[in-house]
Length: 351
Image (cartoon, rainbow, N blue to C red; front, side):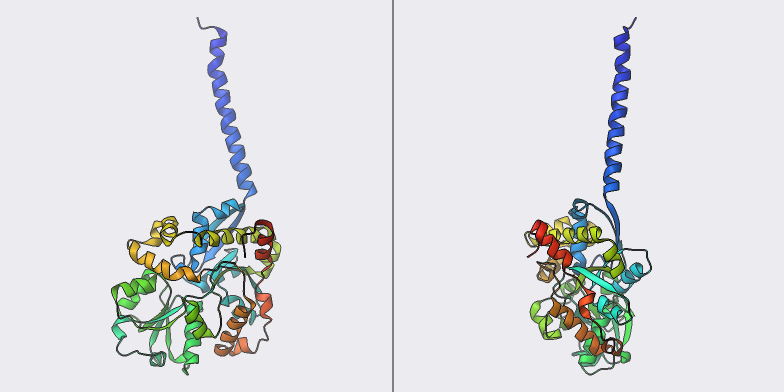
């Protein structure tokens, strides 16, 4: 006969296991409750211009900041913007210029952390049309690819056409995305040229050594030549109402991006690539690495918006859009450095 003390042991073990499971469940539930859910709409996650947003997730920086972040990958910046304006996402990871453009339509959007110092936009001629298109003026009447109509790639194309004396309405704009679809459209001759970003530009250069580039804003030199000043690209932004109503989440997102930018500038391109999702890197790691090396100078070291850069965006849009030119926009309302400056005070993570 089994002594009573021995019979009680299995029961004690069971109770202990149940208590442990309940404790783990409680801790998990408490952690989930402590984390705020934020949905970020990304205007093309495969594009290296948006790498800090994706890398922050890979590094666990959103979790560290107390956020449960869902990244929604969309075709272009205009689609990401529609997601936020339509209420299916909270924040856009896209180009700052949308904040200026929408201000002309009386829609208040506000950028709160900038991760691209330069836009990285490249106007490239399709390999099949290299001999006939030698300058931007030759794009009159041609079909030019952009990520999506109304996206920053489209804005850039219209600005460059206008700057070179062409009527933007005389060029057909075709939405081709930013990644493999854009490369395929170029290689198959579906379009005559395209506004592209890395890694797609470097992928094309890998296959076509004589690839003709009409305009390139991946470096400070090229950006200054194109716009006459620095020109901010990718940033996190949302409606002014969301930013003001979610200051805790906005600060946490800012902290996560600043920590990621610091990580980028303290690690090698190889180390950065190793952290990125395999589907983003793709099969040709050498080309992705080459594109990454081209892109790293674009990434901000401070996260701050340069007010002169914001003014440059307004100036560019005023050239191409009578609506923006006549709207008397107060560009200072389209961005805030408040959260970056607060992060500097509390963590010293921004310069």
